[in-house]
Length: 265
Image 1 (cartoon, helix red, strand yellow):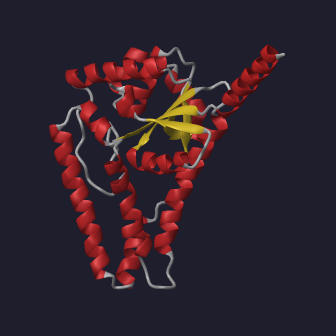
Image 2 (image 1 turned 90 degrees about the vertical axis):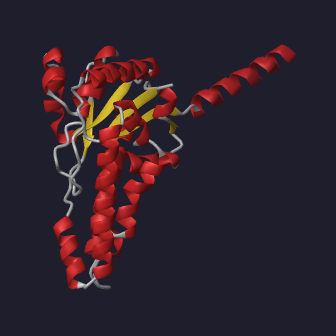
C-alpha cells in the first residue's frame, strides 16, 4: 500500500512539474550589423565582414547551437514570411559573402547549423512620427526638452560610435544585452517623447504608444508561434526591441529568460 501511495505521489509530482515547466527563451538584442540608417541617431557601421568578426560569428553561433533553440525568430516583417523562406533557401555561401545584416550573419548561420527548415519573421511595422514630435515641441516652446533631446541623441551617438570603434563583436553583443543598455533604450521614450507637447497635445504619448504597440505585436507573434513541442527558442532583434521584450517576459510565466552571457561562457 505504501508503495502505491509513493508511486502516486511521484506521478503527481512529475505531472505537475511537466505542466509548470517554462520554455527557455534566449533573447538577443543587437545593433544592426549592416546599419541601414533608419534610426534617428547617426551611428558608425561595424565591419562585420572582417576575418576577426567572421571567426567570432562562428564561435557565437556554435555556442547557440549547443543551447539548441527549436525555433529562431527574427526582425523580418511577419507579413512577408514567404520572402524570408525564399531568402533562407538561397545559396548559403553567397549570402554570407554578400549580406551583412544580423539575420543572415547570426540567425541564419545558427539555424543552418541546427538544420532548421526556416526562420520566423515577427516584425510588425507601424508609423513612428518623429517629425511630428519635433513640431509639437516647437509649438509648445519646450526649449529645455528640445535641448534634452539633442543632448541625449548626441550622447548616444558618441558613446555608440566609440564602442563600435574599440570593441570586438562579442564585446558589443554582450554589452547590448546588459541591463544598462536596456535602460538607455527605454529612457528616451519616457524622459523626452512622452513629455512632448502642450497639455492637450498627445503627439508624444501617441508615439510612445506606437512603440509599445509594435513591440507587443512582435511579442504576441512569439507567443502564438511557439508550440507546445518547443522547449527552447531564440529571438534576435534590435536592442531597443529586446529591451521592451525583456520586460514582457518578466511578467509572462510561460517563459524563462536565458542570458546571452550564460550561453557564451
